[in-house]
Length: 361
Image 1 (spheres, rainbow, N blue to C red):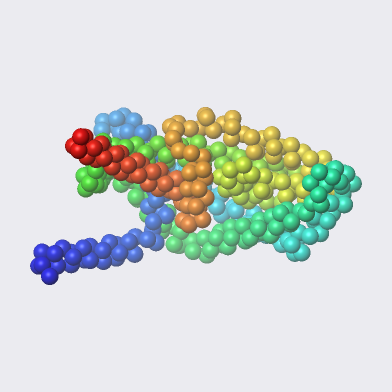
Image 2 (cartoon, rainbow, N blue to C red):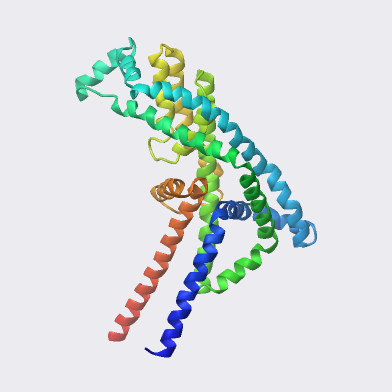
C-alpha cells in the first residue's frame, strides 16, 4: 500500500473518531444550543441596532440584549411549560373516560342524537352506511398525545436541576452568539468548499426559511392554537390550554389541521345534548381557527420561504417527530438546504454538460 494513501486513510479515521467523540459530548445539549441559535438568528438585526447605539461595543450590547431576550421570550415559555403539567393531568382523565371503550359509546350517542340522526340518514342515501370509526379512533389518539405531554412535563419537573443547567447553557450560548456570531460565521464559511456565491445562497436560505417558518408558520400555528383553546374554554371543555397546544401542532398538517382536535370536541358536546355549544364550536372552528391562517399568515411572513407547502409540512412534522419542538423549526431548514445544494449540483452538471457539448462541436 502506498504510504501517502495509508496516512491519508489513517487521518480520515482519526477525524471520524474525533468528530464522534465531540458529538457524543455535545449531543445532550443540542436542544439548548439549537434554540440559542434560532433565537440568535431571529433577533440579530435588533442586536445590530443596539450595538450601533452603544458605540459598536460587542460585549456591552450582548450583555444588554441577552437578559432582554430571556425576560421577553424564555421566562414566559418556561412558565407555560410548567402550567401544561396541570392541564395535561386533567385532560388525561377526561380522555381516559372517553376512550375507555374506544369511543364506541360516544359514536353511538352521536348517531342516535335527534338532531344528528336525520342528517346521517340523508348522507347515507348518497354514500351508503357510514361508520364513525375515524372519530372513534381520534379520542384514543388524543389521549395518547395528552399522555406524552403529561409524561414529558412530569419528567421535566422531576429533572428541574438538568433543565436549569440547560437553560443556563442556552442563555450563555445566546450571549456568545451575539458577541462572536459574525466571526464564527466567517470561520465556518471559510472551510466550506463552495464558491462565494453559493455560500451566500446557503446563508440566505437559512435566514429566509427560518424567518418564514417562525413568522409565517410557527406564529400562525400559535394563533390557531390560541383561538382553538379559546373555543374550548368558551364551550366548557376541560384543559383548553393543553388542547390549544395540541391544535397548534396539528395546524402544521395540511387540509385537516386543527379540525383533528376541535371537531371531536364539538361532537362530544353534541352527543351530550349541548347543541348550542357544539354547533358554536363547529362554526368557530371552521370560520376562525381553521381559516385564520389565510388572513394572518401574509402579515407574519417577513421573508418568503420560496418552498412548497408540502416541503414545509413534511419538514415541520418530520422534524417534530424526530427531534421534538426544535425539529419543527430545523426540519424545513434542512430540507431547504438539501434542495439548495441539489440545485447547485444540478447547475454544475448542466454547465459541465454544455462545456463538453461545445468542445465536441
